[in-house]
Image (cartoon, rainbow, N blue to C red; front, side, top):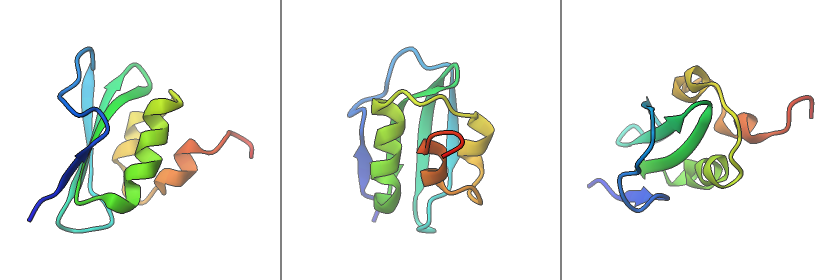
Length: 85
């Protein structure tokens, strides 16, 4: 059973592209709505472990490489850490 949890609560407006990433759970996925190099909204489906990190990407307006978002071998937590820290 799919359980959606959306930080945006609706399909966002103003995004330029979407990035889909498989989460740690094989039954789910994450959709990032990206404008420029910032995530403006996220839909997490069966991805509870990743939800808090994805929420930070949106709320803190962190600049991000969309290719890194799509790569499941890159830990999402590393994407929200300050550069050089």
